[in-house]
Length: 297
Ligand SMILES: Nc1ncnc2c1ncn2[C@@H]1O[C@H](COP(=O)(O)OP(=O)(O)O)[C@@H](O)[C@H]1O
Ligand SMILES: O=C(O)C1=C[C@@H](OP(=O)(O)O)[C@@H](O)[C@H](O)C1
Image (cartoon, rainbow, N blue to C red):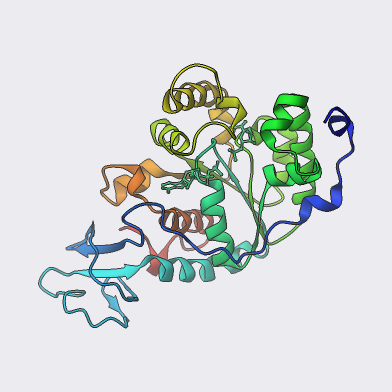
C-alpha cells in the first residue's frame, strides 16, 4: 500500500462509471408512495397497486380503482416514476448534455438519488469515491485514509473530478468533502452543481443504520453509531456549510417535507427528491420551474 500511495493515478480507469441500468429499490416500508390532492392539499395514501398516470386532476390512468379520483373531494393521485420521467424529458433540453454534480454531506443520498437521476435522464452514473478506489487498484476509501492520509485522498479526489468534468451526460455523486477545495468547484462547474440539504439527525440515522466503518471521518472509537455519526457530521457541517451553499441549486429536504406536509424527512422517497432536483435545475436554467408537473402547489 505504501507504494500504492505514491503511485500515479491510472487515469483511464477514472471515467468508467456504471451505466444507467439501476433498478429503484424501495428504501422504506412506504415504498412507492402515491401523492393525493384533496382540495389542493397533498396527502399520502396508497390507493392502488397498479400504475396510475395523472396529476392534479389531469387524469390519464390505467387503473380501474374506484376511489382514485373522487369529484367531491377532488382526489387525484399520480405515480412518482411517471412524474420523474416526464420531468426528466422536460429538463433534458435545458441541460443540453451538461452533467450534474451532486454535493452534500455523507449520507445525504447523492448515490441513491444520483442513480435514479441517471436512469431517468439516460445519463451514466459515477461515484467519485469509486473512481478514486479504482485508480488505486481497488483500495477502499477507508484504507486510503488509514494508510495514506486524508491529503492523499483529497489529491486523488481532485484528479478524479478533473477527469469526470470532461465527460458530458453523467450524474456524478461526489464525496462529501469535495466542496472544500476551490479547484474542485472549477471542475464541477463544467456541469450543474446540486446540494442535497438533509438535516443532521436524518443523516446520522441513515449512517447509523449501515454503520460508520466505510466512512473514516466518522469512525471514532467511542460512542454508538448514531452518536459517532451525529457528532462527526455536526463538526464537519460547521466547516462546510458555506461551501455547500455555493452550489447552483439547493434541494432542501425540510422544504420538501413542509410543502408535502410530511412530519419527517425520512418519509420523502428518493424518487421525489430526484423530481425536486430536476425541478430546481429547470428553474436555475431558466425553464418554467415546474409548470404542469409541479410536485406541490
Ligand atoms: N430518501 C432516503 N430515504 C431513506 N434513506 C435514504 C434516502 N436516501 C438515501 N438513503 C439511505 O441513506 C444511506 C446513504 O445514502 P447514499 O446515497 O449512499 O448517500 P451518499 O452517497 O450521499 O453518502 C443509504 O443507506 C441509503 O439507502
Ligand atoms: O465527507 C467526507 O469528507 C467524505 C465523504 C465520503 O463520501 P460520501 O459523501 O459519498 O460518503 C468519502 O469521500 C470520504 O469518506 C470523505
